[in-house]
Amino acid sequence: MTRRPGFPARLGPAPAARRPAPAAVPARGAAPAGVGLDSQAVRSRMVQKLAAQGVSDPRVLAAMNAVERHRFVDSALVNQAYEDTSLPIGLGQTISKPNVVARMIELLLGAPCAAGGRLGRVLEVGTGCGYQAAVLSHVAAEVYSIERLRGLHERARENLRPFRLANVHLLFGDGMAGFARGAPYAGIIAAAGGEAVPAQWTDQLAEGGRIVAPMVMANGRQALVIVDKTAGRLSQATLEGVHFVPLKSGIA
Ligand code: SAH
Image 1 (spheres, protein in one colour):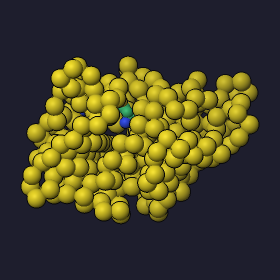
Image 2 (tube, rainbow, N blue to C red):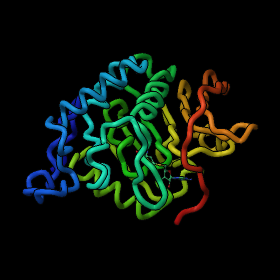
Image 3 (cartoon, helix red, strand yellow):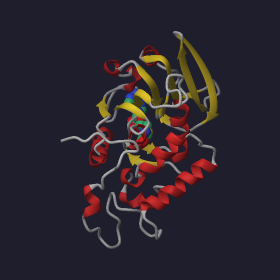
Image 4 (tube, helix red, strand yellow):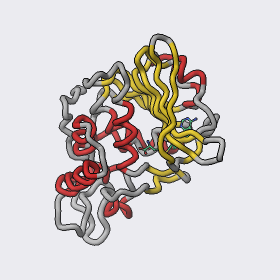
C-alpha cells in the first residue's frame, strides 16, 4: 500500500536507521554523528540560517526543515550534510548548497500560477541524489525529475524509496528535451547549467508557469535565469551568478 504524504509530509525513518551503526563510521542514513544533537535540531539550525540569509517563504522553510539531507549524501560526508556547502554525490556531480536549493525553489514558487499556494506539476532536470526532488515534493502537487546518468538515477531511486513520496516520479533520460508526457508544468527547475533555455522547456511550460535555471552568460559565467509564461508570452530575467555542473545532452 502506498500512503500519500500529508503536508508537511511525515518522513518515515530509513531502514538503515533501524540497524545498529558501527561504532566509528556512521552508516549511510544515520543521524550526523559528533554534533551532540539529533538531526532535527541540526536541520532547524540550517533553516534558521537560511532565513537569516533571506529565504522568507514559509513553504520553502517548512520543506527544507522536513527533508533529511543527510540521507542523501555518502556516509563519510554525513557530518557536513547541514552545512551550507555543495557536496559530491558521485559520477563527478554535486548536490547543491541548501541555500541555493532554497533560493531556487522560492523563485519557482513565485510563478504567477502558484499565487501563494501549492505549485501544480513540476519538472526537475538533473535528479542527482534526489534531495531537491524530495524538497520539491513538499511544495508541488507532482514532481517529475529526470536524470541523464543511469548510476545517479538509480541512486536517487534508492535514496528516495524510504521516504515513500508518492508524488515524485523519477525518469531516466535527457532532460534537455523536457518530459512531454507530464506537461504542461507549473514549474521547471534545472540543476545543471546550459547555454540557452531549450525550446522544449518553454513549450512544456503551463500558462502562468515559471522556469528557474542556471545559464551560461555571454561572459562565460553562469547566472540564474527565470522565464515566465504569461498570456502566451515569455519574459526572461537574469539574477545572481551561480556555479552548477554543465547541462549535457544524451544519456550515459
Ligand atoms: N538536484 C540534484 C543536483 C544534481 S547535480 C540533487 O539534489 O542532488 C545536476 C545533475 O544534472 C547531475 O546529476 C547531472 O548528471 C544532471 N544532468 C545534466 N544534464 C542533464 C540532462 N540533459 N538531463 C538530465 N539530467 C542532467
